[in-house]
Each structure stands twice: as structure tokens, then as C-alpha cells.
Amino acid sequence: MAEVNTTQMRDALAWATNDREKAKEPSTNPIVWFWEAIEGDFNEDRTTAQLLTDAAISMIPLVDQICDLRDLIANCKKLSHDYKDKTAWLALVLTLIGLFPTLGSLLKGVLKIIFAHVRRAGIDQAAKAVDRGMSWVIVYLRREEVQKYIKARKIDRLFAWLATGVKELRGRVNTKALLAAFDTGISALEGMVNKVRLVPTIYRKAKAALEQAKEIRLAANQHMEETLKPVHDILTTIILNLERRTLEREHAILNASNIHFCGALPEADAITLMRQHQPSWLSKAGDKFIDPADVGPIRPDVDRLSAKFDAAGNPRPQKEIFPYLTDQNIESFHTLQAHTIKGPARLYRILAPNSRGMSDCWVSEEIFNKLQNSPNPKEAWRRYLAVWPDWNVNGQFVIYDVKAGESLNVWRGPASSQEKKALPNNFLEGGWEQIVFNIERSDPRGDTMIYYELLKSPKGTTLGPPLTQAHVNHVTASMDKSEKAKFFSRHIGLRQQINHPNISGPFDTGWGYTEFDGVWASDKIGLPALPGQATAIAKGAI
Image (tube, rainbow, N blue to C red; front, side, top):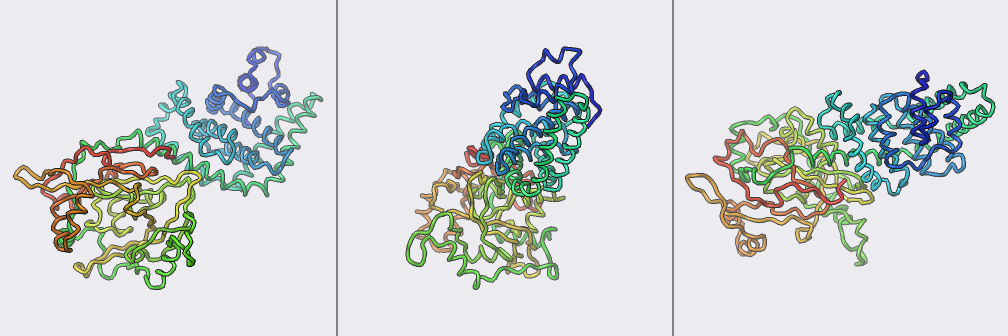
């Protein structure tokens, strides 16, 4: 612990005990006052104003340490009455995180506010508590002294910066690091105890608090590991909340009136352009090839897990049903496994204006970040997730939030390489993890699509009158395969509305809406102001 600064200690204790008059008395010994206050003057049920002040004084190192010791003593006192109190162990771990030596004061201030709400709510209500805490974080970040701190350190994209900090912290939160922080706290307490050796009544109280902390430290080895999972979940919820606020505030949010789209890329045109341009994401014969999964031995398991009824004809519980996979879905994997994603978690889907937001192919947050951090994200997406340009011309992405308390059954595994018969010497490599889940097209949570005839004129391509999905289904019902192909070559389907309550977006990828430097389209189509092309944040998204 830093050398005692009596003025700073008086200020910290004044805030902690709400006794500002005592701080003004020159005779007040702050060390004695600290131990006197431990008996009960510290208020565990902090008011909002006190929480904001606690967060603000995180920028004053010594004062911050005093508050950390206050919380450490309070946590150990509570646990001494019941070693099995999971909420008390959670509170202790959140306090110990505050003792991490590399935790910056701004991030620590934000976490102090959120952690205080989590302590009050308990593990079961942690996700809601994070959301409530974030409202007060905004108030905290607007404080004059905090704004000066942010400006002095030239922190841009504040929520993204905080999210990155919490991600780094999450990677460091483990039993070893927490126990080391506990030892640091106990060492600081020993220093505080030694300073009151000559004050008998205070010394007995101080020594008892120290022994209590050491007793809990001995028990921590067993209980700390059990608390790591909920703590990691809390940190993940904080990250997702911060990232959602980043997306809400940044320029990546789309304005449909400004989107110009070149339309879908027909397969024949895509093949011609790939032959001509030989894009860098296209692998050649002799390069690494990842074999597709063999449908035969996998199909029985897929059918069994996706079945709505058991062998006796009884309905299976919805939570046990996995998405149905076509043979093409199965072959898009190298290997695959059924997996249940438990919230809070976030999935991403790359798409184009003519793609459905709710459809089969998704990636995890980890893979999405890996894409965005690549030197050329679009190239990495095509190459390692094996996506042909005629399948998806990209430009946008949507986010699916698996909310706290929810679960989602999916299939996941590395993508297989993709080949085209018309490109015998080329293929897409694959290898990065993909996630597949879906809903039936008749499900009301699916996207609403609308279709337009593409009208060519000397001035460029424009859109004809809109056709509903029902109208298109009626018109094409009696057509054969070639007639349908001709119809859809003259009409483009656009996403009119995203209906799934867990999906936010679309957001702009920043990769552009064209392929091959735009040579495949002579002009751009100005999209109408459709709700499905304008960014919306799903209600309750984390």
C-alpha cells in the first residue's frame, strides 16, 4: 500500500462514512478512524451518489485502495458467517478484481458501478443488474472530472475502448490471479494493523478483521473456482452491452436512403470474373484442401436430433431439438457437432441487402473479430469460411443475441473447402469455424422479403413496382426450373423487414458492396427506404 497521505485518507473516509465534519478535525487520526468505521459505519447499501463518487475516486490511488480494503473486510466478514454463500463469494471476487495492479482507474470506476449493482441483485439477476448499472455508468462518464481524464488520455471510441479493456481483463481473471490479489489485500491490511498497535481497543478490532480475512483466504482455494464461471459470464455481459452501445453511436449504422447496391451476382458471371481476375482468396490446385463431411454416417444423428417427435410419436421438448440440416449444410462442414449456446452470447452473420437476416450461416464473436482484425476482412471471409461471390455479395452484417437465461441449439465446426465444376483448378479453402442454425420459412420470426423487377434504361437500372413474397410464390408455382431462373434473373429480392426479436442490424461491414473492384455491375441500384435495410437494435439486446 502507498505511504499514508492523511488528507487523502480523511477524504476517503468522509465519503465512506458520510461524516464530512470529522474529516475537518485536525486531531482526527485517519488510521484509527478507518478501524473505528469498520465496526459498522461503512454503509454496504451505497446510494447512487455514493456509487458515483466511489467510482470517481478510483482516480486517486491511495483513496481507491482504502475503499478496496473496506470492501475486502466487509466481504470476509459476511463469508465468515456462511462459507456456502455464493453471492458473498461473488462479491469477494468482484472486489479482488478491483485489486488487479494493471486495472486502469477509468475502467475500474466503470466496473465499480456495475459490480455494485450486481452485488445487490445476486448471480441470478446479474444480466439485468449489468443493464441497470450501465445507465449510471453513462452518468459517471459525463462527470466533469471524468471527461477531463478521457480527454487528457485521448481516448476515442470510448465504449469500444472500455469493451476492449474488459475483454483483456476477462482473459486475466483466473484462480491464481484472484488469490494473488487476495494476498496483496491481506498484506495491505497487515500494514494498516501494524499502524495501530499502540491503540489497544482499535488494535484488537483490527487484528480480528485481519485474522478473519486470512481465514477466508484459506477457504478461497476451494470456492474461488466455482465462482469463475458466473464472473466470466458477468464480464461477457458487460462486453456485449458496451459493444451494443458502440454500434448504436457509431457511423456504421446504416441509413437506407444512402445505400446503393449492385444486386446479386449470377453464378455464370461470377465464374467468368474469377477466371479473369484470379482473386487472392481463390485457392489453386495443390493448395490445402479441407474435405467435406460424409453425409452418409452423419445423416442418422442429424435426423434424430432434429426430429420433432420421438420414435413413439410423442412431441420432443423444444430445448432438445436441433436445427434440421440439408445434405448441402452437412457437406459445408469438415466436421460438425451439436452444441447448445447458453446466453449471454453473440453470433454474427455477413449478408447483402438481398439476403435474409435470419438464415442458416453464422459465426461466433471470436471468429467475427478475427475477420475484422484481418488485413483484408472480406478476403478472409471468402477464403476461410468458403463463401462464393454468387452466394453472398456481402456489405452488411447482423447480430443475434442469445440473451442471459436463453439457450440456442446449433451445429458448429470448421468449414470445408468449396468447389465449382466450372472452376476445376480452383476452390475456396475453408477451415474457420462456422455455426448453422435456422427456423422454418413459415415461422413469423423470419424476414419479410419484397421483390422488384430490374428495369434497364440508358440512365441505369431502376426498380419496378414491388411484389410481395406471396405474389412471387403464386407466380412461380407453376414454373419449371429454367423459367424460375429466368424470372429471378429479372427480379431482385430485398430484405423488407427483419422480424426476429433477437436480431439487431443491419450494420455496415465497411468492406463495400461490390466484387472485383465493381467491374461486374455497370450501375448501382438506389435502394428504397425499407425497414429491413435500416439499422434497428433488438429490444433487450445485450
